[in-house]
Image (cartoon, rainbow, N blue to C red; front, side):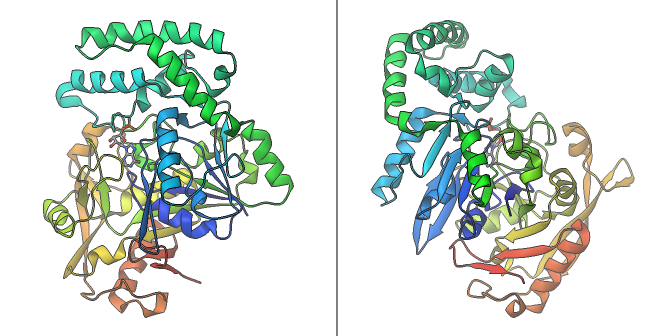
Length: 423
Ligand code: IMP
């Protein structure tokens, strides 16, 4: 069965670990959207791997990975990631990593424009990762983007690049940011393309061949439902479809080949960057940061933390068609005497069960909480669902009751082994 994995919150739900865990039963792992704004941390046998563009399946011998057409690709960042993996003993080859010819390129001027646009937004800034993701997708939608396939024709590529650089430099200059040197960039990008060329492929045909061969596919979602360009807390979102539909458009694998959708949510909520966050709680943020947890894998930023928000996760269940939920980081709550769970919002004196349509309305919502007694014991060594403290199971039952999603996987620590599968 082919599986799509999506984040049910604002990203950083621990999807990398769940993907890694499910990869054992999979043959092919596909990234279909986002770029190197993602940071998937996988810890195996105490060794830490941070992946940004490459699917987590790369850590398993014999698995194939695909970077699909829906991804925006920073070639320099990808080469760096491949080199880092090599230094950690993981070899990335054309056999285990194919890159779509249709993927759009993230160029250094996109990064420059990302920063310039953020600075000009002042108080309205989005808090982007600064990786050029928004400007690269903007070019794609505007139909002026450069794609992997364009690298095959260096002359035509150089012409298009010259236009893009000229245009970008006008904005960069106006905002006092360093301009791009066309000649240097043109040379460096073609060098990078040479290094990566053996990986370039028609990944749609490849994915369909895998399906015809009876291989199992796993789609590794990046970011989370509320960062989705259509369904997230707009405009405080990323620029791609992070929800399950994005797995199809971003890979060329149609919905009829998706067998199940696994949603991943933390046992609480976090977000990085700006934007509404109804259950945000400073004490909880202090609690996690004091434990050295909840710092971003890509930017190192301290994440904002809050209680589990069933309003968001329930709605994520609808948008994505989530069949089962993986609840990660349960152990983060081990020492708390009282745990809160948001079951609805109050907006202008009315109880609402679904996320409101605008960020302003979101900001006007107050959470309606249920309180649950904490279990006050260490869960990190537990590997069997029934061995979890009764109060921890009661909490997970409340998550199922309030989100209408069955909890089938529970994470009790960062290591691959610290994962409980509920039969
Ligand atoms: P961008 O994707 O860099 O444009 O950033 C837009 C918003 O999405 C910002 O709030 C980022 O912090 C957030 N974001 C992007 N990628 C991730 C991720 O992988 N995890 C969590 N937040 C992310």
